[in-house]
Image (cartoon, rainbow, N blue to C red; front, side, top):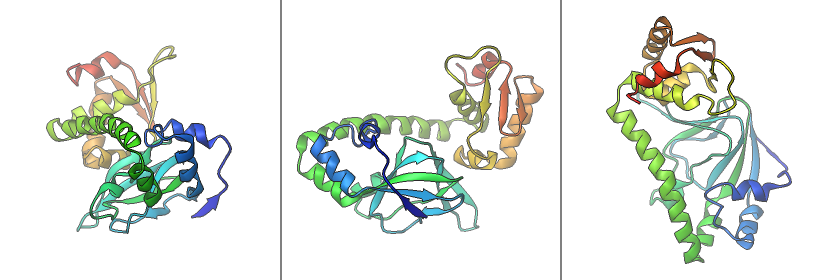
Length: 233
């Protein structure tokens, strides 16, 4: 782990992020005074489960996996963070300010790091900023509640098919669409609460049905309509 210079144009980047979209220029400047840009190598840990949570993060490049290790030593991936996403921000609003999961780089990654105390002080000084942020966070939370509903109420095939559909390009595709998995299959399986062998078996079934074909991390979708039918859509 090492620190890099903050690049120019960071204000525009921050204003596209829901946590900072409601901040005025003075408030944003205060956050920038305490922010850092951290470079991580593949597999390097950003923070550990149970560590005091003093900072939250915005991913600039690469991917970060958030997870916990069970008593039997198995890692459960809770989330795979993509560029532009914030993470670990909820901890600063909790009574027990310790990271509930660990965070590590899947490949080389860069993250912006922000001071929890400074952000909380900004919120304490402005009720209007708090109310705007609450609205933004409510919309953000709704997405996760919908995902929890799918994870708990739907079977493994539904979860995997829904994930594949979410990765399909939405525009500009000529001919057969293709998906490039952004992480190893074992990591995606853990993220979807599916055993790796079950994950592979479902992909194989979809291949035998002629719906998809798999080439490493690349998946060609031959019949998107039949894929959607598996979710009841």
